[in-house]
Length: 104
Image 1 (cartoon, rainbow, N blue to C red):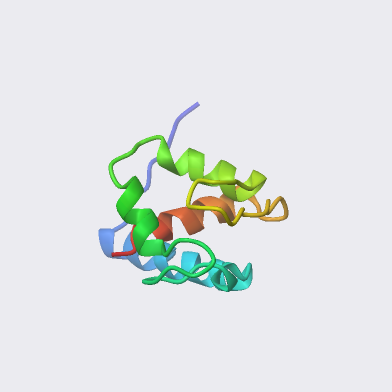
Image 2 (cartoon, rainbow, N blue to C red; image 1 turned 120 degrees about the vertical axis):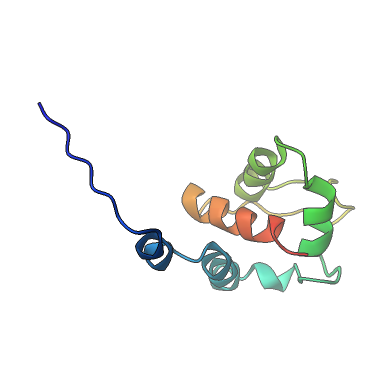
């Protein structure tokens, strides 16, 4: 069986690629994460800036964060627990975490 490869100009790939930042931000709003989290200030939960700062450079962090979103957590950022969000797909959680890790 022959394999045929197609080469697309880089500009085509850039135009077709989704904007993960916009997608992550939209998902955060859709799932109402902003009820407990803000970009640059502590609310019920930590700010996205504080989360990104704490976990930047930690290769295990995205998987840990995804598990905390899915299953909930207690005591990681203080006394208020984070409830589980089992209704959010793994792909959506990954997109949101990528967005949060990019917040400066």
